[in-house]
Amino acid sequence: MKKAAFIGSGNMGGALIRAACRAIGPEQVVIADYAGEKAAALAAELGCTAAADNGAAVEGAEVVFLCVKPQVLSGVAAALVPALNACHERGEDRLLVSIAAGVEIAALRSFLQGIAWDIPILRVMPNTCAAIGKGMLALTDGGAGNEAGLAAAEAILADAGRVERISEGLMDQYTAVAGCGPAYVYQLIEALADGGVLTGLPRAQAQTYAAQTVLGAAAMVLETGKHPGQLKDEVCSPGGSTIAGVAALEAGGFRASAIQAVLAAFEKNKQLGK
Image (tube, rainbow, N blue to C red; front, side):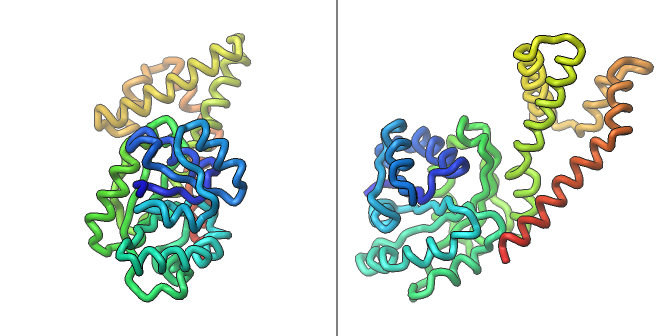
């Protein structure tokens, strides 16, 4: 019996699969995907196992991660009911962990028509940085008090990055900031690098300088515990070049645009869950 099964091996699912292989070993991981060749290729790369289908993945592991898009989750979940019932009849109940944005645990439970017991379900929302162990992940059991399930999921995700337990009522808000956030940061890095190129820096150097600067600034926030505004002020000398750049960002609506990006993502998350 393997520890973890992953159904879906797209960008987010693939990131978690890589992290799980590092945390518990590839021999404890089985993966399945509607595109069988995709799962087979990833399994060959990582040294884990590719299942013949989703049902086989459920039968072969204790914890099942549903790494599919919200739009298809209902169909995927419903198709797992026979395998989940078979496991239950053997006294081997599975733990389900969904990464589908916006889909609450109660909704996922409603997709599992034909399951007569209280199957344990968690939600986790990662970001793609989990692929290199630098992710931010939110984990919830929806208030069920499932300490054993939460601990099992945390062990599998231990090498994905920072994992925090939150209430399910905050999951959409979290997703809008951290789940979607890498895309916003990549745009910032690209824009900083473009500015560097405009001033005469070679592209490769400008990109490296921008990325390392973002990495260092993020570490300063986490490691010092200081408010970002305070850290910003510490860089801005009176009448200096940094405050001139900050003023230009303010004139362009930089902070307002970032806030609106989070709000737009939050509203979309709510729509996905309906």
